Each structure stands twice: as structure tokens, then as C-alpha cells.
Length: 313
Length: 288
Image (cartoon, each protein chain N blue to C red):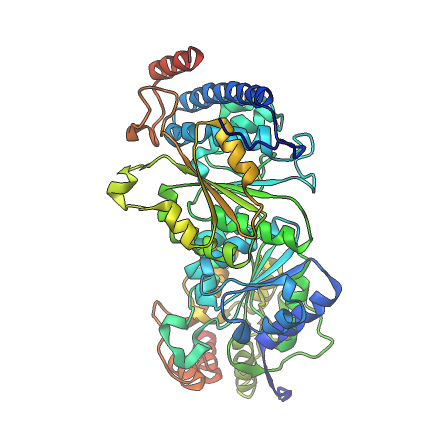
């Protein structure tokens, strides 16, 4: 059984990490675009108003200003919703932050379909894809509060630009207070030999639930927390795939260009084998509760288990 | 002639000293103009029009106003410069080479595979703070640099050169609003107001209207000068930055300035001169 440790927002982990970072490092600067209360940057703002700038409803400006501040040897966190951080400000992120290799950590909240009721205009289903094709950009999708907190702290001190995707809703806590985040290292959550399930972010918990279901049927799934989408832990993924011979990817994001796409690129070149991608397929989102949307788009444990069964057949 | 040049010592200069400065800056501008034409001519691609129009602005910044150290491009106390209209890169490169940031010979490998000087500014080139080229972002970057320097209580200034055509980008005005709201008095922008863009006259494409009024409305400290009058530019640079607001100097310029057949000729926005045209242009500059 998966231990019930309650639920908490990944963006709270971000807000707490910022306060920890701010206390010990004066180079930390935080920028937001009129969403400080939602992204949880507000706590930093209240503690260190001189190291916080609200750029207003102007996300393109947010990213270019973040680049400028980073050029003065600061570590800059730039936050808004995933849709606006990536799609809206893409040119600024690509040309100004990425090309100049600046120390801007884009911490975007409200990524994915789990934005829920706000609907398609606010559900970024392509942010991982957009960010991972930018040279030098690191892409991390934390699964719970603790992983978010630790990933943010770790990425603060990894040189160059990074994209961290955080969610809106509370998600089950999977890790503990002493969790150590290892960048670019796929983490085996549950060993198995029949198939590999690679999941990140919100999808880690349903993947673990699916593995429980499958175990009762005699199928042993190896569940891997693929928190770092770029750079991919090629060795870790290939080692597991070589062992199980079957791979499923899980993301609350479009599979084309997303986690599914990234893993398919790797396996296609290195180890072609049967594979399935759980996620959204070439479709916009829609309004609904998180629970409804997860079921509607086949992101729940039951659907993951069903896909695994058909793959193992 | 009213002179408000304060020079680097903060002293009002005498007319004879001002004349020396003028001769010096004009002579450098002529050299830069020659280099820019040759660079683009040899590269067989590039943007001569808007490179030639902003020469005096950059020369006044690098040879009169800015504190910088070509031998130590990362010197922490340097003033910063951002070329927001990145397609004027040849002018910036020629100026940086003249300052001594890198060898002048590099100029003749502009835009070549394996060469250092990219088609648009790249932060790996000594003296270039950030990569630019996609229009409408440099002002925001300069705003960020100015904010970052203020956080560390630095007295350094941040200069940026933007284009008038570039100001059709919404990002310029997003940056303008934030810089004014943040009272970034350490930010001084020069607008190369040559009145033209690739497709024609700015006023025929999307009219920018009364630019000075627009910047005033955005709460900036605005000055207007003849962008080819080096003393006027220096004087405006000296006066800028004293208020609690960011400053802009709207430099009225001529696209293609200094080469008769390029002047106010929109065809030379983004077209290199042929080898024959290059030779004609270089001779014209030599005899000017």
C-alpha cells in the first residue's frame, strides 16, 4: 500500500524554498507578473521587497527583465502561470535567457490539465515541449511538495537557465522532509520486471496506484519518478527498459513533444521496444474539476493499469 | 553655441575643449563608418542603413560618456550598454574593436562560419552584455540590468540603443512602463530615430506619431537631438540621469548616413552593397 501522507501544493514547496534561499543568499531575486499570491512568490516579496519586482501583467517583459537582472550576477526566479511563462514569452525565453545562458529559473505554476475549471486558455499542455527544445534549458517537473522545495533549492545553484513546472492543485505527498533531490537522475520508486512506468509531477501518484493494482494481478511494474525531463537520465531509463522490455510514459501534458516524446526519441534511437504514452493527444483542454479531467483524458490509475495490461499481453 | 558638456570630471568645458572633443569624436565616427561599410560589404549581407544612422550615438557613448575597460570587459564598475536594435551590430563591433575589446581584423570575418562576430550581438563576444537581435527586448533587458545594479547600490549607468521601427514592438512599451514605475534614473536610452524600417517609412507602415510625447506620457525624461551632432549627443548624455526618472534621448538621424546612395534609401535597410558599391561608399567616406 502507498502510505497516506496527506496532500500539499507543489507551489507551496516553491514559496518555502524561496524563503530559505532568500535568507542565506543576497543574490536571490524574485520576479512575478501579477500572480504573486498564486505562484507563492508573495512570501519572498513581503520579506525582501527590495529584491522583488512585480512586472505587472506583462510576461514578455518579465522574462527580458529577469534576463537583465541575471546579467548583473544575480540568481533570478521568474514566476507566472506555465501558459504565459512559456508560450507567451517564448521568444524572450529562447533568445534572451537561453541564448545568453543566463541564470534565470523560470518557476511556472498552474502547469497542465489540472488547472481545472479555468479551462483551455490557462491549461498549458505544451510547456514541457516548448522548454525542452531550447538549448541549455533544464526542465524539471516535481511530483510533490518536498520534491518541489528541494528541486528549487538545487536548481538555484546549477548554472544557467532552468524551467520548473509546478501545479495548481494539492497533490499527495510522496516523499519526506529529508528528501534529497538528485538532478537528472531518474529515481526508481518501486522495482519491477514486467514493464517500466515513467511518470513525473502530478502523474507519479496515479502511476504508483496503477502499479499496486497491477501487482494484485501478478504484473510487476517498475515505477520511475522522471522528475528531470531535460537532460534525460538516459542510463537510468535504458537500464530499466532493458530489464522490463516495455515502457509507458505518464504526463499531464501533450504527449507529442512532451515526456512521451522525449522518451520515445531516446528509445527510438537506442532501444526500440513496445511503448505507450499516457497524456493528452493533440487536443486542447477543457473546463472541469481536476478529478473529472483526469478521468476524461485517461490520466487516472485505472487507465494507466489498463494500458499496462494491454502492453504486457 | 550653448554648451553644457560637463566632461568626465563634472566640469563645464570651455569652447576650445569642446571643439577638441567634437573633432575627436567626428574623426572616430568617420573611421567607424568606413569599417561598417567594409564589414557589411565583405560579409555580403547585413544592415547598412540602421548601422550607419547610429554611429555617432555609439561613438559618443563609448568614447565620451561610458566608464568601461576594454582590457577587463567584466569590470564590475563598468557602465553597461545594450544594443536593442541588434541588427546595428556592425557599428557596435567596429566601436568595440576601436576601443580594444578585440582585434580589428575580426571585423572582416563578420557573419562567417567560425568567426566570432555573429550576425546579431552574441554575449560571448567581449564587451557584449547580452545577446540581442529579436527586436523589442533590449529595453527590458536594460531595465533589468538597471534594477539589478540598483539592488547592489551601484552607481553604474545602463545605456541602451533602440530603434524607432523597433518601437512598434509592444515589448518596448512594457519595458518603458516598468522602468518609469521603478524610477530607474540609472537607465538612459537613445532612440535611433531614422524614420525608416524594412518595408518603408515608419509613418507609412505603422505611424509612431509624436514619439517625444509618447515617452513623456510614459513618464520618462525626454530629450531630442540631432543624432549626427556629436556635441549635442554628448550634452544630452550629460544632462540625462539627473532626474528620478529613466531618460531617453531621441536622436533624429538619417538612415544610411554618410553614403550618398544609401541615405534615406530603404533598400539599404537589410541589403549589403555590391563590391563596386562598397568601393564607391568607402571612397566617399574617405573624402568626407
